[in-house]
Length: 146
Image (cartoon, rainbow, N blue to C red; front, top):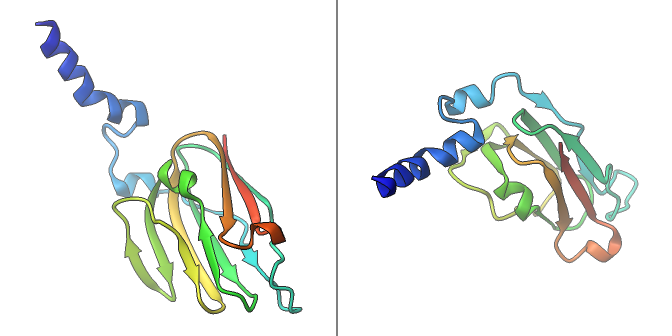
């Protein structure tokens, strides 16, 4: 009897903890907020400038983040803990959509352009992001989820 109750509890616990027991993907993205654009490099020729180091958001809310590469370098954008603790709805590049069923490994910019990431920040915390290989040049920052 106790084992059955325990297994029943485990079955429903994850959805209940996330507040998703009755929610669908469409419910999660309603009322999406556009975050300030994160720009890597600039038009003046500086490849290692970052437009903002911190981006704040609230857990349980839907957001769209535009990440734009303006520099002349190849940028590999990593935010592994943030992506694992968010529900990523889709990634959009030039009006082409990639619908997600898990966290992306990283986003890569071989050329200048913008990638839009649509997500719900699920778990509060401070999550570092970085451009692989360019951390020493200051290409790092933090996502803060309250």
